[in-house]
Amino acid sequence: MTRLLVTGVSGMLGANLALFAQTRGFEVLGWTNSHPLLNAPLETRCVDFRDPRILAEAFADAQAEMLINCAAQANVDAAEKQPEAAFRVNAEAAGELAKMAHGAGVPMIQVSTDAVFDGTRGDYRETDTPNPLNIYAKSKLAGERAVAEANPDATIARVVFYGWSLTGSRSLAEFFYNNLSAGKPVNGFTDMFFSPLYVGHLAETLLDMLQKRLSGIYHVFAPVSLSKYEFGVRLAREFDLDANLIRPISALDSDLPTRRSLNLSMNTEKLQAALGKPLPNQTEGLRALHADFDSGLRRKLLSFHH
Ligand SMILES: NC(=O)c1ccc[n+]([C@@H]2O[C@H](COP(=O)([O-])OP(=O)(O)OC[C@H]3O[C@@H](n4cnc5c(N)ncnc54)[C@H](OP(=O)(O)O)[C@@H]3O)[C@@H](O)[C@H]2O)c1
Image (cartoon, rainbow, N blue to C red; front, side, top):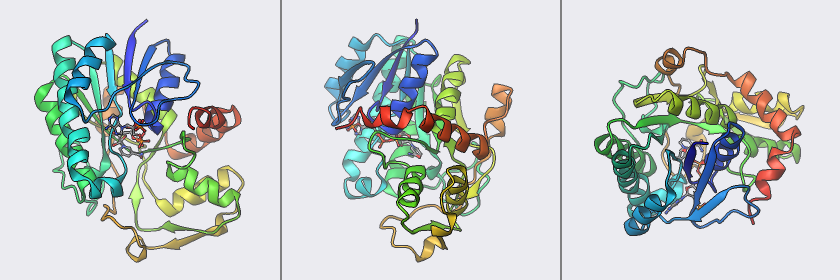
């Protein structure tokens, strides 16, 4: 059994990834920070990335054979208010982990973001020049650079995803699902484009990438992009909810507190060629989201949270 360390296991990606990796036969060790998991079906440890000494000690104890770093200050508005903490967790600590993984010969994926781009053009490739607009995105780009410098073998996976989370409200899918199923009207941005993968498909793809020992930057997204409005409409259709409750508006007319990139459609040709297969599209993703709801995944994830 390969021992896989998943940091940020109390987050949306980390928790989904840990459960999926177990079904693939990995022995998973998960790290949390301020939200220990309740009834966790895996070994967990609380490790605060703000403390370099604890990070080094915990990595040595972990005896990991593979590592996926999902931990981050991933709340865009919180990062804006606390830039030092965001850079510490998202950049410095990621670099320290990468160095330790390199020293121990542990293959590693650093999870990064589409938000490293400014969203003025879209169809971004790995070779395009990033231009992050906010503190969160700047700190994640600094994390990519710290990881690449400390560990040239590491994989940097830029992602965006949706799914079920431990809080029940972390992802855009849950925003639409929760409001529409309560009959509440919501806004959907018609001019904000993204290429989100279902988190289960993302988990599967990250494990494939680790096993193939890919290194360098990869775009891990759905192969077709869509607006956030269209995403909501498609989700409503998948769950038989009322899509008319979604008001199409421009993101420029909204009251989002932190500046965000508009066109984050992403080019995934490099990864599809490396894996030798197409990445799942949104129709497949929304179907999988629904199937996982029906099989009780949402309830299970909620039960890990207090
Ligand atoms: N959500 C998206 O669509 C999206 C898009 C692009 C990129 N990403 C990237 O994907 C990764 C996972 O995102 P997510 O949405 O799953 O995030 P999330 O739900 O906000 O979870 C963040 C995780 O990081 C942990 N964490 C936060 N501060 C920490 C600290 N000081 N020390 C150690 N761990 C800490 C949290 O632990 P506690 O909760 O226990 O404190 C939690 O487990 C992140 O790298 C994020 O930047 C996400």
